[in-house]
Length: 335
Ligand SMILES: Nc1ncnc2c1ncn2[C@@H]1O[C@H](COP(=O)(O)OP(=O)(O)OP(=O)(O)O)[C@@H](O)[C@H]1O
Ligand SMILES: [Mg+2]
Image (cartoon, rainbow, N blue to C red):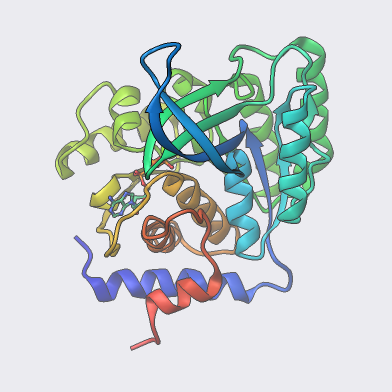
């Protein structure tokens, strides 16, 4: 178990790399883009139509989710981002586009698939309590023509990437063919391919550099328990060997992270103090990990910075990104 000083030294080393380059790294984010909608209101009565609460809506906001949230996290740290995903031919795609543009992320590389809606998760919240969540999405393989268009976008852009993130929420964009293509490009450019995995697709990730599963995903993919340190190590090692990866970065919620490499195993306890909202912490974690790695930091250094960043983001209500300044403040001056 690394001590606090060692953790900070690693994270600081990674942070310095972010400033070191002649230009910011360019990261490709490939996967499932999602629009998160939050509907806020009050409940004063039960509906006369059915035994359900009536929510009087006061406010609605949308946020970037899934791969779009990963892109947002990268952008907040000054990276150049290419976001490749699939949307429907609908009004939600226009909302997503507007939200991306507001964050200065180009929507131009998104491909429209008329067979499915833009993935939207809507939460209705009254008095700080979620009343219901409804999801509009369609999972399943992309139509052939859409897949072709998607892969063309990859081929157009991948030569310029310093790192690649595959953000797989299991909607159908990510499959073995896509990962093979990305791994093929990465072999030419030296960029790392980091995957936020969905257990059903585990075999698709063979040959990538890193996966960043949470505890549940690790257990599902490795088929063994991963809660305790020794279990997490064994499960991570099993995945590393089976998929031929360079690193497994297990994100373990309040236990921080465990980094498994072929010749090394490192536990990174969390430094988070206040925990308000853990949603999206995994997106922040993979964004910072891949960005630091692309900037030249080592695997453990990059994970240490990602762990700090995720520890900051869980302390925030509503905001899902972390800035350079916040990372610096969290780490303090060098000893
Ligand atoms: N309760 C917590 N306390 C402290 N740190 C946390 C907590 N939950 C998450 N983190 C931080 O966030 C990182 C990622 O969280 P987690 O392992 O829950 O990922 P996840 O389940 O993929 O998240 P997501 O909700 O984005 O899918 C952890 O490695 C840790 O650094
Ligand atoms: Mg996750």
